[in-house]
Length: 157
Image (cartoon, rainbow, N blue to C red; front, side):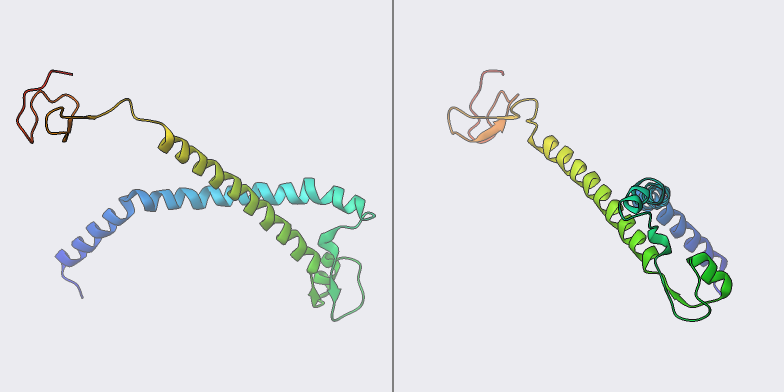
């Protein structure tokens, strides 16, 4: 059994771990990701797949399956109720489409963030921060009035 001071120390370490920004950021990312997944599933099931089904003659991908046991049925739902073993490749197709949409959305998000970072890096600073000493040609701060290398007096910037 740990002494009380050891437990208090472990609790303190845990508090420090939880308080780190990256842990909190990760938690927020997971929560946003879960919400985003719900939106994407709805997008695929309610908006993307119906037109594809119409183009394919009214088929619903979610009901594409291979029944392996039991009496033949028309839908996955009926097969589940009957307790039949099925290979639900239509549901798999829906999940692949979900994955591709989420992957593309993440790609666009990362691309946008990278473009913003690139623009920040390309933006020049407010002006020069150093100048060259006219006597010894060493680099000195822009506001320097005396060269740190050759000790020459300089005109104020």
